[in-house]
Image (tube, rainbow, N blue to C red):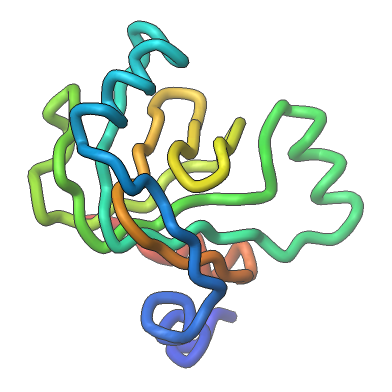
Length: 134
C-alpha cells in the first residue's frame, strides 16, 4: 500500500536537480517537431522525471514492451498541442519510451517538452501511478 509520506516525498521532497530546456518555448517546440514529426506534444514546467524502482523481472517485461522504467509528473502544463490538458493543470505520463537528457520525455502517444528546471527522483510504481486526475 502506498503511504501519504511516499506521495508527499515524490511531489514535494528533494531530488536531483536537472536543468531542463533553457532556450525559448518556441525553440523547444521546433526541436520536437523535427525529432518527432506529427507527434502530439505537451510543454510542461516544474516537472519530475520519476525513475521507477522495479525488480529485474519487471524491468525485463517493460523493456520487452519497448518501455522505460520511468514516468513523468509535471506540476504545470504550459501548452498541449492537442488541447487534451488545460494550462496550469498537472499531468502524469504513462511509461516512457525515450528520454532526451534535459529536454524531452517521450511516451507512445506524446512528447513532453521539459521547459526550465526540474527534478529527477526514484519512486515505486505504486506511488508514481497513484496520482490520477478526476
